[in-house]
Length: 359
Ligand code: MRU
Image (cartoon, rainbow, N blue to C red; front, side):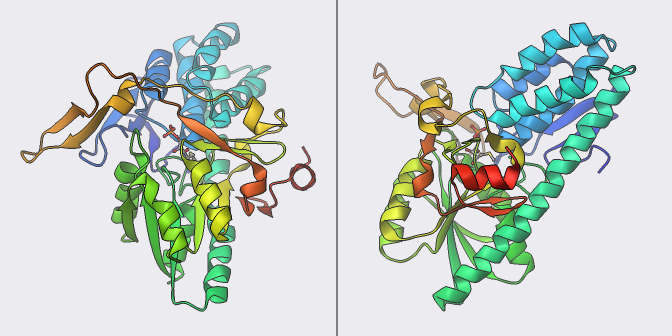
């Protein structure tokens, strides 16, 4: 794909080649892009969520190593320090660490660190794009199956946060099967959890689906359980930021509650992931996956557009009330119907995962 993807791409607008990314903080109000030209800008963009979503963070990190290689003029030892900064920029999504480690390992004995970093980053991202396409096909087969068994003509899918092409190259994970469903002519409707506190569902997933003409309805985060009880949810598909060796799934805060409600109502709960989202080093996800703690102001303030079209942030809490902001939670494997992976559907179970992925 020559380094050109939907959420990020190599750009030749500057003196040195750099990475251009969609500024996801501005969506859905404004489509704007940012140039990332050095390590500092890459790290800042990941931390302040100009770019976000497990896969895309990994993709930006891989190209970040290329940009850092230009910065240190191909000196591998100096690159190690830059790589450490990128690797530490966010804690939960393992795709970030995976991408940095893979890039540095491949470059260890390179004679031409800059050119090789460019090539390896493109290869890594092309692989991710291919895996997303496979997830689209495999996940859509499940959608077709569930629809057929239900005897209905339309399928209602609930999703949480954003695991579309803004989150994972190049069609996403949870949304990839939904894009494929539309291509196959399936009547699909998506319940979009708003996903407080940053509202990635209301702002990003809804924006993606609207762009693609896919029927969707935004719901307040607490609505899913009720919809399941009245038979309005046929399946749940979410993405993930890290999956442990035994199939526990770290995903955006609130996912666990949806999984509990789905389990109680007999609604199939699927998690769509590329291979890079597995952390085979961690056996017990609930105990061991590091959970990001973000600024309490993300809970206390909310962003929107006023009637004059001006984007504003307003406080919604008493001035002095404290707040706390966990970015993710972990859904235990026992609540998960299946993992939709690039290698097929896999039970969320230690032995089944080991068998499929030779881990
Ligand atoms: O904090 P974010 O926006 O980077 O969180 C990532 C997510 O959107 C999700 O939890 C998502 O389902 C996994 S990314 C494929």
